[in-house]
Length: 193
Image (tube, rainbow, N blue to C red; front, side, top):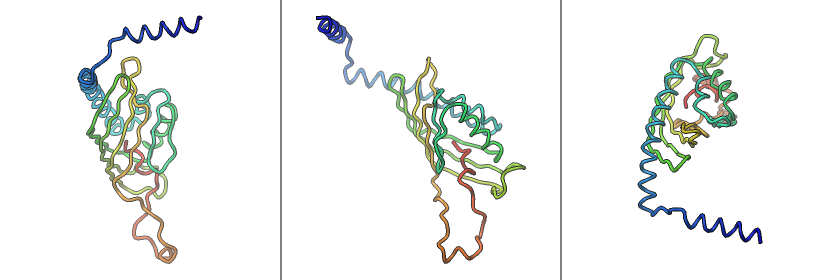
């Protein structure tokens, strides 16, 4: 009997809730998306500034507590503390400039998605690991999954990759010839996004 009472109450509460028409839902999402777009553009500007001023640890503050940064050709970096360590290590390698260009935004309640592109250029810092190229440039695309946490949009997950082809090892026959230019490491362009 008790189960039937709870079920009846749940059905009654659901029936009393106002339902959105498709047009109302679309209007609500458009309004939420505009508010989200403003917040996402502000976060992008902060991220660009953190890269320029070598404040990798500050990049971690843009993420949720268990945020996930998914750089190309590397394992995911999970949690603010790990992201701060990862970005600080990147800062020790390159003095860089990052430009983020959001291209598509969509929000629905506390969730949002952003898609865009980026460019990065950097010069090796003194003390960079041996074999680090003197300078790097890259461009690519990204996808960000956002959560609204206590009224603030934070990055839950970000993944990006380069538009440039991945440097592959030379075939065995050609491996005997000296390389024309130094090979970059997978970590060199990780500063980007």
